[in-house]
Amino acid sequence: MTRVAEDILTEPPPPAADERLAYGPEPLQFGDLRRAERDVLAIVLHGGSWKATYNLTHLGHLCVALREAGVATFNVEYRRVGDPRDGWHDSLDDVLLAVDFARSLAPRLLLVGHSAGGHLALLAAARRKLPVVALAAVSDPETWANDAVEAFFGGEPPRAGSPLAQLPLGVPQVLAHGTLDDVVPFEQSARYAKAAAGEAELIPLDGAGHFEPIDPLSPQWPVVAAAIERVFA
Image (cartoon, rainbow, N blue to C red; front, side, top):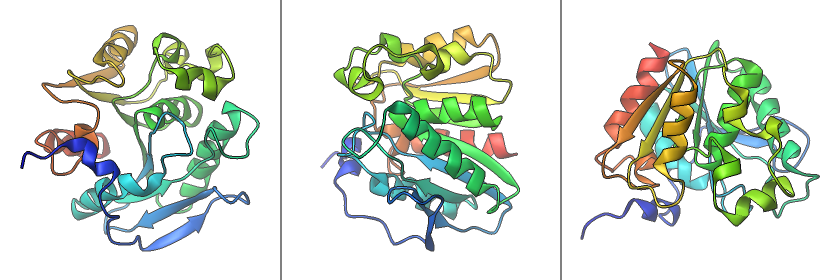
């Protein structure tokens, strides 16, 4: 059978992380730490249209693959639509709190986010001045034709909630995006990279859809892994 990358959402969980750590007092303010020998740590943010339906489990496979490449990971959970929260700020505040906590775990940090998690990773990169690898990211929510945008922001996205509006970020940025992505269009990343005027690198994943960038068994995964390695180099 031909593998479908979207199956990553329903596959059995990977082996348990080394440790589950609370980064704040709220029940959903925790992350799974997988250690590696190097002094670098990727803060990983899952997607799922910012909805509580999706959690950090499916990105555990990516985290295992990164650890095998020598990169430690902190796979972060955060409050989403459907959880007790007071709006989109709570989701971003959770991510920022996780970043601040992660500074105690490793001297060198990188943000890695997929889809809606890529959106939060770009916003966090702007605010905490960290390098970021955004995979199939919602970088311009105002132009994303998805009901999840209104649900997340409670209406039209404000300027403060748009990664595109935060440019220039002043940090290294890599955007990897499938050219056949039918969930978050490739044009989101293309438009963002063009607006970044050389500050962001765009990696088109030819023929890939939305989930290939986070599937360690996909043909595109080595390209994504190399991009993360390059940012840390």
